[in-house]
Image (cartoon, rainbow, N blue to C red; front, side, top):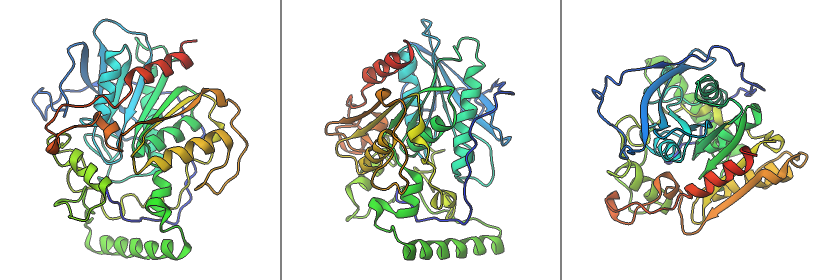
Length: 377
């Protein structure tokens, strides 16, 4: 996923907490598929699945897949989202199903403006609305009769790993957070990959480009799509772009509702992330946090910096210097040997075109052990 630099001139102020009224949800019929299974992974024989919907505080209807263990469970629930630009039929659904196999009630959901969820214009992203999406999922889970409202956590994948950290900083109802192969979407949109465009001049040029796109859209009444993962794949594409292609553009992970698999965001759809720095307060997260990254992931620097800043209050890429975390003992950074960024989407594949058997590069047992250690005390 190569994203253009997108910047805007508003300062995002995150809500400190979500209000916990109106979390009623509905089961919804999957009319688009005629009730047929439409995920990129097979349904486990040990879990039940149903489609649900609930609203966030902006009045946007979010659609999710609820997975529950057939053999009962531990009454703990997990909301799952990501990767950024993906749909719940891909990686987040796999994570949700695998955790349901291990006894958790889980909900993988499409965020606002994407997939089956509501919101216009489509393929738009916002730090505050996306954070609210996670909090709305917590609202929903907290009202389920089979869930202990004191045992709710979240899992964010790729760009939603950073959003998960922001949600955890905002809402103490979240008792544990897993950020898998995370991006800091504000940092990458504002500074470019590997901070190569971290200058006033580069940001000003990007702002001018975004302003021109907005004027063009206002005059034409049409939004231009920026494109998802590059296709055809350029011969000189960086390895991480090839890794994205291997997931999103092959039978391994392609889905028709996924922006990354198809036409991506519109040209200023992620503009709101560029001028925001939404991980400012993660050093104050008191609940447990596990950040997982592949050893060979191009995005590894996002997770390492976020972890260091979360625990110590300072890190490369973070201009602020904050106090050290008040509860550092329940924070962990896990580097997974030999894994690249997309290996933590689905475990990784051994054959080209995504036709091989999945590896086991996602440490499911470690995730469960971390959650139980820090929540079931």
